[in-house]
Length: 478
View 1 (spheres, rainbow, N blue to C red):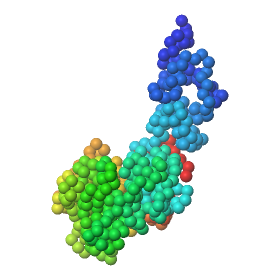
View 2: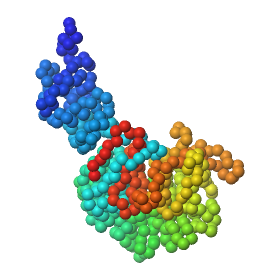
View 3: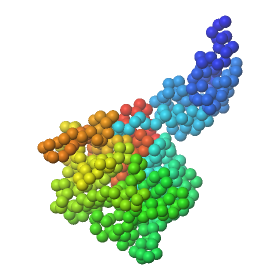
View 4: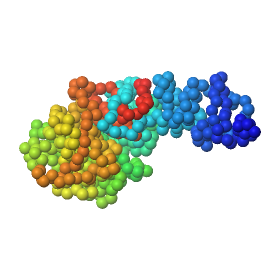
């Protein structure tokens, strides 16, 4: 019996050839290639048919050619991304049941800040200067501009826009995959929207009938946990609080703090973070005045409703490290590490949240000789921790601090007897070195999936950063 005859008599032979007629164009492939699409896919189902004539599929043959190449090599041909939009490929992949293969092949390589580069700028169609944004774990993006939220999927393809009742949105948080909690500096309350339907589902306000100072409370920061939303509110007379809101009922379950913002150590938290490992909530506030930067970091235990640790750093001329108070704070939720960036020197320091004390800070030792003399303009600083890396926006430039030993963590310390403190050996590199007037001051940094997103002051759109070793970077049309 010939090899071809054996394949016909045994239709389950992996090497059996199968002919397809897609939109009038003929293709020939093997049983194993089609079955690699997965048992629930259309292609696997067609491969089980004992057909002597080509199986006809009334679809676009050119895109099918791309998807067939994907099944054969587990990667997309680079030319395909110039010929078709990712949305066109995604629609056909969904029809054939190979969308998961397309997703894994088209999403970026693991994000390493040291070799990241801008691959695109996402610009909403109208009111394109973003007020804030939220990045998803899958690399998707929600952009708030004016009172609208423009939604981009994990391919960064535009999905839809939802118009809210607010004139502007200055805070946004994903409380569920399709549910957004939003707030505005010009309107009171926290508002919940279902972005899949565009439906307004409810709101939460901070009120107190016994205290007339508590009214028109605006949202300043939002954090999310599986059961609760943590929101900092600020009133016109500077009364402020951090509330715990039950996600199942949208009711206030407790009040972590209430204070009068007349002093720097009592201003409303501008950042709120929930720590998954311990369930703690971390809030920080920074103000800048004639005497320099002032601020605090405060950690609450929501279960006991009490402060478990705090630190205050006054401005210049007071009792802080060399009069060098922090200008921003970030939290590495993967390793439970707190970071701060100093306002004058630009030095980076870390503290293990599990070992906090009176002076827990360990200052980073820069192991990159070319960066040791890097100057800092001191105008704008933004810090964001993501995937065990620390991204620092200084004026218009972007730096990354990364560990020397990827298997290690942030806790690899060595003594520094000369300065009387421990230091951590990290490597600092420029992700992007630009003058602040060249591209604009960095206003926000946030990671999502294997991407980093950056917005700049009065600049349209959100910059998309990916590792430059990605073999087939997708150019997303705006």
